[in-house]
Image (cartoon, rainbow, N blue to C red; front, top):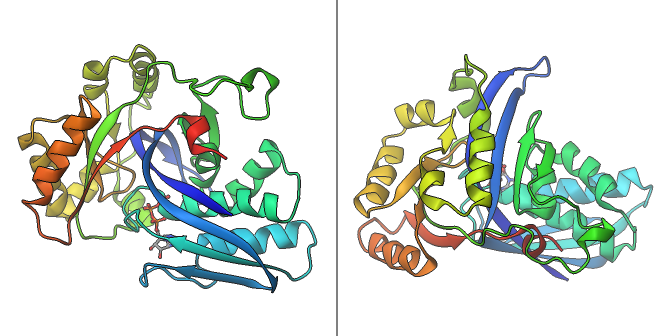
Length: 307
Ligand code: ATP
């Protein structure tokens, strides 16, 4: 079976404190966008085999899809039941777009079906949280606010996929799609490093989350542009001039709501429509070196992103 493993962007990240386990306490608002890897999950006699179209991605036990398979096998006492996972990579790696987390999330869904485990949302979310902070969000995607180290997810659309009220509701985010241009400089930024370099928010003010969700519900893209925020951005910007160049490219193209996603280096800007995003992306591709990657993307609702 082949699953689409979508990227996410962070519309906001607030660092609220440092936890005893070394992680940061955060509040973040995430949105799935339609840039995707393909994750093919098939059976094999025994063991886990991961392959990836991008030779830079590790395929051993460091790969999050590999770890997902090993975790499920251990947790449910499945002996040496075999799985092969092939990842067709399109999402830039270590770019702040949760590529690896999405691959792990889709591997969990794939194994649930392949091995007929019958796991529902809660069990899948628990497994996902053990694999990484962004993996629970990536299980279903859409728009959500995540807290803790990012693993406590509240979706902005009310009911989950297992909820009877959800039947037949395909587009819970009534305000429709948002469109972005994404610029990815040729850098890999370690999330751990970005967190360690960033200052905690003294005011602990995460009220902008409420503001963002209300303007999104209202479909007010102009106001959304003015309330995006990422506490990780100043430190990454200071260390990597490429972030400012990406920002300038998007600003010169007339985009607003420009922000680094996650720990970077991907930077996005809000476009008024998909056609405008495509036109700007194609223009920017002609102006940057081939190692810079530029995408026009649109938001995906929870149902489109999940399986
Ligand atoms: P996040 O936003 O969740 O912090 P990211 O988008 O910044 O993630 P990833 O693309 O997930 O970063 O890659 C981070 C690191 O994880 C890479 O350096 C890579 O070696 C490793 N990795 C492990 N599994 C994968 C995978 N399936 N795809 C990509 N990278 C992976």
